[in-house]
Length: 185
Image (cartoon, rainbow, N blue to C red; front, top):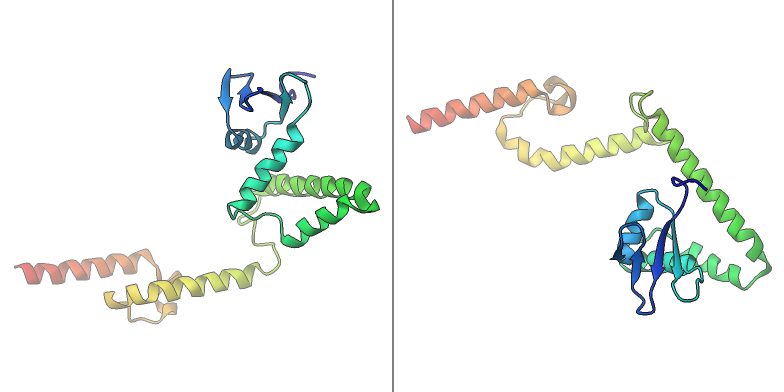
């Protein structure tokens, strides 16, 4: 195995402290989660027995994130996982989960590769137009009250794209500065 593929070795001492063998310092579960998010594979072993504890600690990281409200796993999936431990489907579930996550990673990679080749990578997604219209309506509703007092009386079609045309804003700013000058002088 070459150096790039070799997992980061973390040793667990009898005190339950976790030791990063690359940097020669102690790490936390959150540090380990950060290594994994950065694309590193980790291997956690018990210093004394040599037992591989990686699975146990990765499950603990997932459980801590879920308990903090960072819910990634829907309740139904968690129920199905518990059921899979007590049924004959046990042999199918790990393979299914591994293939599903592999497909997800591949899809994300392809989307990132295509990011530069199309103007808006989300535009091809089903329902994108409806979502974009909802977002525009939301933004218009949120800014409508604030922008209303600044002289925006033209219909949106005449204001330019989305009512946020830079020239209109500059004109409004100039108008306000003129009014302020008259009040001050």
